[in-house]
Amino acid sequence: MPYATTGGGVKLSYQVRGDGPALVLLQGQANGHRWWDSVRADFAAAHRTITLDWRGTGDSDKPDEPYSTRGFAADVVAVLDELEVRRAHVYGTSMGGRVAQWLAADHPGRVGALVLGCSSPGGAHGVERGHDVRRSLAQPDRAAAERALLELMYTPDWLATHPGPHLTVGDPGMPAHARRRHLAASAGHDAWDALPSITAPTLVVHGTDDVFNPAANAPLLAGRIPGAELRLIEGARHAYFEEFREVASPTVLEFLASRPLG
Image (cartoon, rainbow, N blue to C red; front, top):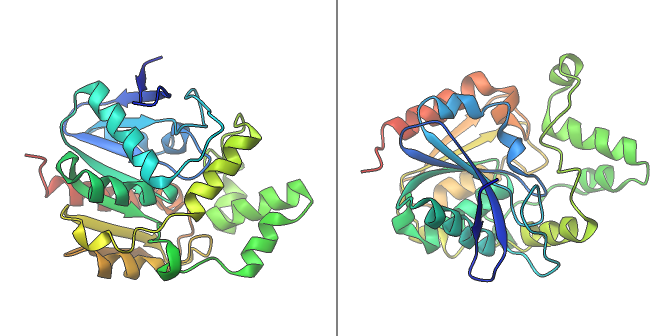
């Protein structure tokens, strides 16, 4: 199992699949690299795909200390350094999109094209999920809360024909402290002031029926990042990239293909 080590001594597990221009795939909060398992082949056919297990997940170290989306971006740079990848395209979804914002803002020379999926600028300008969504996820009946999360990720029709296992609803091996640290990192994200400095060609993708990370965040991001393009996928919820794979993957691949790394 290959690892990169941060300046602070945290070991980060990473995975590489495919050949071609480098593409970093960044997953959501409290998830390891398996978030991408169902669609990774779409990208590995044309790209050298690079994933990592966030600190606190998978085979990476799980220190009990503050995490942040900006810190996660620095972790991505540590992996790129270990692989001697000077520059890569970056596709981040959910919290991974928040991390990708900082990666593009803080390390512009390392990012080719940028894709932000089902993400948010965070802070006072981000559109938060409704109280009803929060209540559904916080209910004491664990099975009911897990079902609520699945229904935020996927449509009922999809769930009826895809019983799982679902790899986008959290890393089951995470310790409780790491889950809390991930939640705090995502909740504390605020890149609003940094977004106008992003120079990478950017595509913002979001499902129109996403209430987990409300779809209203997509035009906010696209309007804040110079020259960004916006693509809304009709009827999709939070895990648009999986359920609506036949639309989402070609959309992202076409965008990347038209913007060579150089």
